[in-house]
Amino acid sequence: MSANDKPPAARPAHPITDRVREAMAVSLRGCDELLPEADWLAKLARSEATGQPLRVKLGLDPTAPDIHIGHTVVLNKMRQLQDLGHTVIFLIGDFTSMIGDPSGRNTTRPPLTREQIEANAQTYYRQASLVLDPAKTEIRYNSEWSDPLGARGMIQLAAKYTLARMLERDDFTKRFKTGVPISVHELLYPLMQGYDSVALKSDLELGGTDQKFNLLVGRALQTEYGQEPQCILTMPLLEGLDGVEKMSKSKGNYIGISEPANDMFAKVLSISDTLMWKYFTLLSFRPEAEIARLKAETDAGRNPKDAKLLLAREITTRFHDVTAADAAERDFNHRAQGGVPDQIDEVALGGAPLGIAVLLKQAGLAPSTSEANRLIDGNGVRIDSAAVTDKALKLGAGTYVLRVGKRKFARVTLS
Image 1 (cartoon, rainbow, N blue to C red):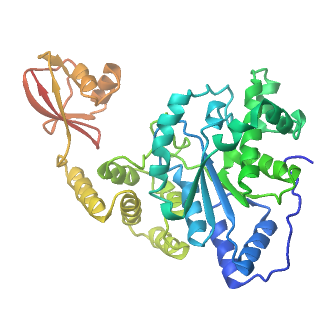
Image 2: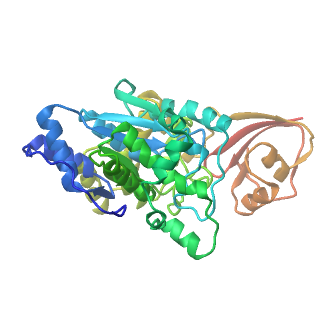
Image 3: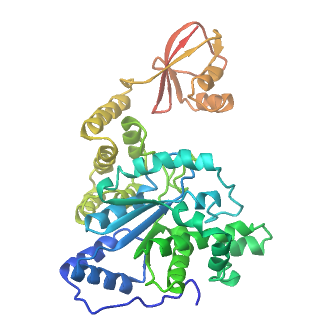
């Protein structure tokens, strides 16, 4: 049986009620694939008839200390299913992080150290709790069952899956054909993620579209272990602020869920009018009918900024509060009119007189002097509201308000 085969789940003849249809609609909202739909419908009907909640699993490897709103696409779906009464399991992949997920990569991912994993994991659940209901969330670590597995257990697990099936995975296939090395430990990652589903007896596993193969391995392994196979639900990957690349902290196109409200609000407003509707579908909890109405009004001539403001307020309120969202909107309007935000970074530097490019770099407003010069060439730098055009400018001792682009400010005291 290949990873794409769909062994039938037990399908007791339970009625498909309106509540079951509603739950199915919630499941399908914004998703890329739900496989197999018929099995999930049967599970929902059984849950409704018996009062037994389903077990819904999401695993995240703590590969970085912060979660961005791209991660919340699947967390939002978890919350929707949680609100329907199902048990959601937030799984922290502290064991699998030591392997490194090869999904979507054409090179081996460097494994993290135990210290890095523990440091990152400390913040994951706290941040996820901004979306999930902590009182109704089961939090687990996959080291609970992966560490005790041991060498003997790992060999027995590996015997349940073939290399041919593993090489059906697209990124492995491409690397194998082009001669790019595939480390043996990478082959263990899908197996260990699949074994998580066995250990947790999950009914549904969520993930991004890049996780489809791993989720299907979970179905196959559950069947091997005599369990009813989980269904899988994949959500689209969210493009970042550039509208092109997947949202990623390394690409700098992300909105962190723990960053200041003013920055969060302004970043949402910076997305394109086209991308805004995908953000509404995947990030907003507004009814689909309301989103459709907003889009129709925008298509008919309403200013798209009106809808974008609603989205910015909703997201900022969710991760902060209403008061912070109100203040962020006032701050954004103030900046749009050329004003200076109420709260900006205070930076003290020595070495006066200092060249403007060096000053921008040392103040954290530009990553390098060459980038600072490029910003000056593009009329993107202001000192006390005056545009900087001279890259040779040197500033003497004093205090200056520097602005780079629309959102970066700093009050620099130079001595």
